[in-house]
Image (cartoon, rainbow, N blue to C red):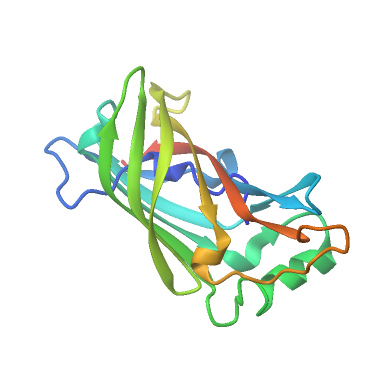
Length: 195
């Protein structure tokens, strides 16, 4: 359950970082991590996380030689409904008292064309780690007005929440279930090159 939840994935954490790679930090105020999931079969509910951080290593142009990892504080989930958010933080869903953070560490990059690539890595939610693949687009790098260097990525993937032990649901009298199992994760990430 998460809406822009993963654009820093667009980055890349491989075990060896190429020479010339630099460290970049996620600029959280200019980034977003969110999700959407089916509700009552006929619609989608969206939400996002407001507390996250991460680092990326790449040369500013060639993502294939880079590395990335990030952490999301699950208690920061926000779906614009306090009662629902409290339920999502509880044991039926994320159980934030026991599992306060979800993490991602990249392992492999599959290059594509026109700035697009696939990013494979380990996603950990509720203490369960599964390999996931993000479709990522590198939006370029630029000098900012304050003398720094920034880069942008967009990323997305689909996961099954059941794979991570997020299994609460309720059957509907008309058929189907209250909450879908497939979660669409969408991320927009702006990075700032470390000085």
